[in-house]
Length: 222
Picture 1 (cartoon, rainbow, N blue to C red):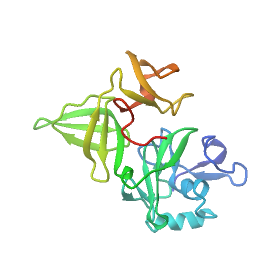
Picture 2 (cartoon, rainbow, N blue to C red; picture 1 turned 90 degrees about the vertical axis):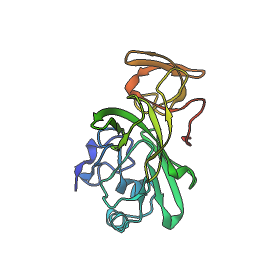
Picture 3 (cartoon, helix red, strand yellow; picture 1 turned 180 degrees about the vertical axis):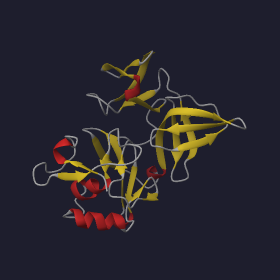
Picture 4 (cartoon, rainbow, N blue to C red; picture 1 turned 135 degrees about the vertical axis):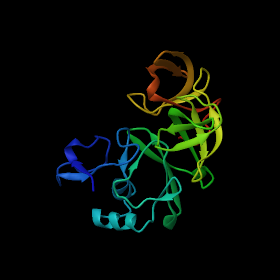
C-alpha cells in the first residue's frame, strides 16, 4: 500500500483534507503526471461505496476494468485517456484533462479505443523498434514512428489502428498547465514550444500537448 498525507494531495482530488491524515497514493505509469488512485475514483467520484473498506473490497474482487483489464490494486493510478469500465452497473468512462482529471461517459464502441503518445523509442535487433508510450505500454513494430506522434490503439490487444503525426495543422489537446483540456489546431512548432488554438491561440510547451486527430479528435474527449 502506498500512501501520502491528505494535505499534500493534489487540490483537484475530491477528498476531505482534515478528517484523516493519510490517503492512498497513485502507482503506475501516470504517478508523476495527472493521476488519481482507483479507490478515490470508486468512493469519492462515483460514490459507489460509502467508505474505504467497501471501495477496497469492490476493487479487490476485480469488478473494475481499466483499458480492458481487471485492476485489483486500490492504488492503481488512473491517467490520461484511461478507459474505466464497471460491468455490474453497465457504465464506461474515459479520463480527460479538465479541472485535473474529469471522467466522461463513453459507449462500448469507444471503450475499445485509446490514444497514446510516443514518449521515446529504441532500436532492437532484427530491424525491430520498441516504441514506449505515455501510459507505460511498449510495442514492437517495423513501422517508422516519431517521438511525440500519437497512436490510436485497440483495447485490450493494443493493436495499432491509426497513427497521427505531431505536425502543424494536426489537432492537439493540452493536458498540463492552465489551458489543460483545450483542443485546437497546431499552428506552429518552434523547438520546444508550439502555438495552437481555434478562435483563441495560446503558446504552450511541446511536452504539454498530445495530438488527437487530423481534422477532429479520433476519440470522444468532451
